[in-house]
Image (cartoon, rainbow, N blue to C red):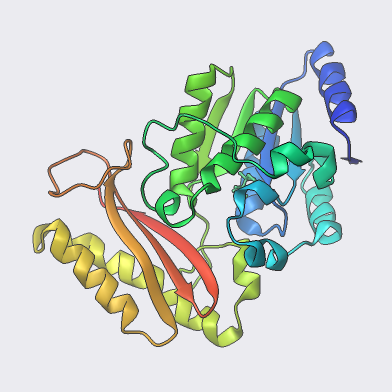
Length: 283
Ligand code: PAF
């Protein structure tokens, strides 16, 4: 398995592979890999001749500099895990290989058609501009046939699908189900930042979401939102930033369970200082 550091080397590798008639799958990540990422990698390996994983902690998607500084960086362990899982190459560039200073100091403009105005977009202004900026660069450099993303980042997945449609990239976007610990806690690189006690407390996020799925028969949407927020906030150490019940395609809030055929509840919760996200499908 090769570790590639430059854009030129990545382009050369992909060109050579395509000249040999090979299909290429890409798994974009920020590293600190866990079993959730590995499920994406396994699927990518199965469905393509070659699987490339990018590892890049993208500074332009962090609106909080502290969060960027704290983000776990574990390249050596990541590489070992990827080698064991038949990854063909890792693209792990330095920041100055990807961005010039103008890009680093300005916001990347993109028409999100409103998808960035809700949920994560409301609380992390500029976050999705950075996501679209880096994912667009990765797509243009590696020209994959397929690219793999987790459904835990539900809004990110919708935005990437929108970007691919807008830019007419010939790339199939594959969304993969959330991977959970036995306790129900959604796997996330940020879980590494939780103490053992916080990790235990954080299991209440999914427990609460799961319990609320049955509410469609007995509560309306507003009552369900109030119940979920109150239940999580009542647990010491947890604080809900937002919980929204939305149309899974447009990400706009629904008022009634009959407003859409695909309805998802998306939550962000602070467990101590660690910001965790999760979601659940209602229908
Ligand atoms: O989901 C992530 O890890 C990141 O947002 C991504 C897609 C790798 C872009 O930096």
